[in-house]
Amino acid sequence: MAIFHCTTKPIARSAGRSSVAAAAYRSGSELVDQRTGLIHDYTRRAGVESAEILMPDGGTADRAELWNAAEAAEKRKDSRTAREWIVGLPAELGEAGRKELAHDFARELAERYGVAVDVAIHRPDQEGDQRNHHAHILMTTRQVSRGADGIELGGKTALELGDKDRAKAGIEGRSAHDIEQLRERWADLTNRALEREGRAERIDHRSLAAQGIDREATTHLGPVATDMERRGKASDRGDGNRQVVANNVERERISAQIIDLAAERERRRPVEKTKTAAEIRQEIEQYKRRHGRLPFMDASQVAAQSLTVTRAYDQVRHLTAERDQVQANKSRAELEIQEWSEQHPLRAKMAAMGLNKPDYLVERENAMKAADKWLETVAPQIEQADKAHLQVRREETANIEAKYQPQREWVAQAERLAAERERIERAERLEAAKRENEKPRHPERKRSRGRDYPRDR
Image (cartoon, rainbow, N blue to C red; front, side, top):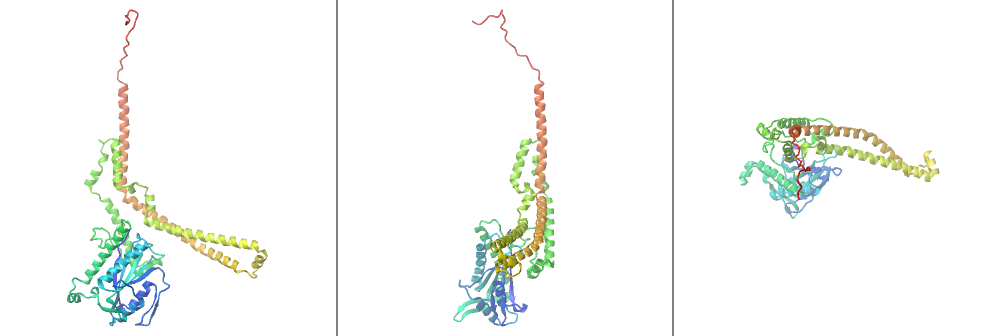
């Protein structure tokens, strides 16, 4: 399911941050901060799908020139040199669709505020949630233009002005209102992108309470808590989110049990004893069509198709496929060594004695040793992943059974009544047939054609 995520925060010197360092890290590049002389080299950083700069005139710019100009334009030690937007890109979109969506939002920022925007699209971390496609969008806090000497920065944008400064400049509303409008705009752009690709999922920028959804919201983990959780260490935010998930599951379970009695009585009319078995079975089929196939399918089969179970199974399948590939490579190396030894028996005998062993054998023996070492480490990983998959599937099956229990109970009760009515109708038919057989019978009258009866002429 597509999830709304659109947050913003400033890059401020008061927090010891630099827009040059932030741009280098997010784009996976090497930049030199001319103000401090520090070299920020993140060229080995993995996970960056693309990084591009969009100017308000529709062109692009050099990353080092742009962000060093942004740093040089600020004199205060607590200046804001950039503003970052972090947006979640729907996993339901393809790579091209996600890139187009991020660039559409960045272009609107550039055109609305006259700023330069640095868009870096990141893929999910290998050890994290594989749906976590996202983009880091850095925008300058000042308006940008091109001059004779290169990039020039002007006044602060309306988004960075305080309420009093906005009022003096004749700008309506507060900066917080601008941010809320941009969050809503991100939701609109995302929903249009999903619609273009024929997806039914939609996102909403409003809070759960504003949407009328009775569910607690989780807290964004952030880089520190995320790193702790990936290393198997519990974090305060992670514990809080796990408690929220447990609370929401309990809330859904309780809500499923709260049924409007009047509506329930109306729904249960098929169990009236005045209906025939055929009528009851007809209403069972109508009830099933009205509620769809899912409530009446095997819960374990439905659970196996859910996203959480599929992801857990994909992890098992991925590790198993890797193991099979490594085993195949090891077997191929063994076969190649055997074939070489048969073709070069003398050299093979010398190599076995440790004399003049050719690189051909060394490479394959090293490959076999590396394969053995890797296979030893992957075995417990596969076992752990398999246990996790089974646990997730059991939990998902239990959740599905609890969710659709009212519909299944209704159908089960109606089926029992239909069977009872069929038994009664069968008995009634037998009783009617018995009464019919017990009626007195009259002998057939045969016309006599005796000797004295005149024959027709």
